[in-house]
Length: 224
Image 1 (cartoon, rainbow, N blue to C red):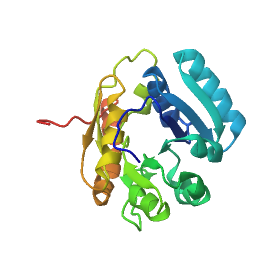
Image 2: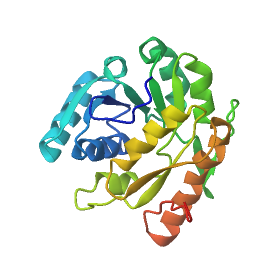
Image 3: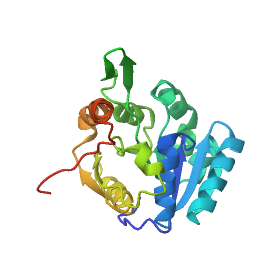
């Protein structure tokens, strides 16, 4: 990849883009003037969701099956359920080689006591992605952003920081720029991939807060 953080000439693909988080991120990126491809297991579902977003935002949003979206993307976000994470990445590895892959997945469980972080053999979803996608540049980001706020057309500014984790400076700078493209949002470098577990796990705390306070809690970093 080049050192440029200019996103205007890059296509942003979102795998699992028809779920709330994927749709919400796609909405915000499209509003920022970026080119977006929604991916889904079913191409028709992705195309229908993309058409709705394109009409709502006036942006460049198209839909495709996950494999075609992965092939079309320059920067590819993984926003899929944890239980299908590894299988999807193994299947799509040939389409993701040489690309910046942004893992947004939180390995969480839920029981009567509420949300909790799951143990991951590789350490985190981000590290699992890096272990599978050996020819991609994997960055962890967008773990702690409220899907409800992202999808709400009445919310003009997403006032939260996005913690960005990775081992390659050019890639983390690029993903920080992607976060910065959304009004109110700021990308903040938060360490190497080995530190992704606690950022992914923090989502369990935020969900617990949201349930208690009927809110859509996010993260702000002070003095940076």
